[in-house]
Length: 355
Image (cartoon, rainbow, N blue to C red):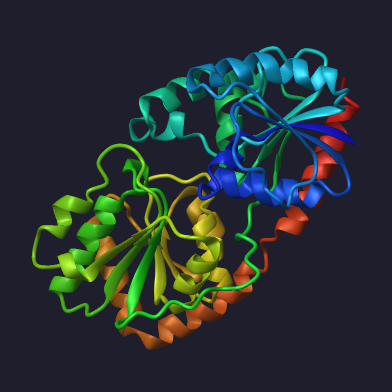
């Protein structure tokens, strides 16, 4: 197939959608002809074969490039199908069948946790994409259910994400046992609640540290407020954004991952932690419970006391930690980028016959 792709998420390699785009495209690009469209130019990923087309470098022109030029480029390149890896379709896409991947429905479930511009774009463009795409992919059954609830569309294919493909890990040495948070520091991730739960667990005798990994997003993360209280400042370590290889080493050395978001459409760090044999502390609803299964301790993200109890449970109950570790390794085998890529190609092929 000749596949035109919205490749803009490749500019954000540490985000969940960036990981998804890179892992899927790197697998399908060697058997199919890809035309990867960008609004402005990143360094081209070396593991994705294909033709890259880039619009103007001015940021203001990015929206127009994606919504006007991408559709024309797809027709000019004779694409059999247009594949949007992120929520929206070009407004000028007329004659090329389309597949869109929906990663979450944050704009409906937790709009207050979104940057206002991103909320406006999803509110405006996602309903149109859901109405016009020949096929829709959801990254979790929870997301597929929310799509059906929103617009009644039930022909959605659920294809789960997986863990980042890392060839080798950079060892990470740390002097104390630690819990781990991985994600963008923004309101939806509930970092403030996690930090407050950690503070309460520490006051109850927890001797572990908390290591944070990931870029700073928008809005208040709660980091500064909690670190200033009860002398926990020196026990919260923020590594910021790091390479996949270094992240793998950080996973290997942690006690467990904590991802108690208010909402996730999937939660790739959950699979990454389980792949490294690590239990997860996560919210007990929606896609997070779907992904974690029996490898997790489920908490109420709005209740820091619930998060504190989970910290203490995994720190003190060795039998529970061993059981969840075994469950995590087994559970991680349910997620595979190779299977996800094959399933995605099947959906793309189906779309070509529908117009």
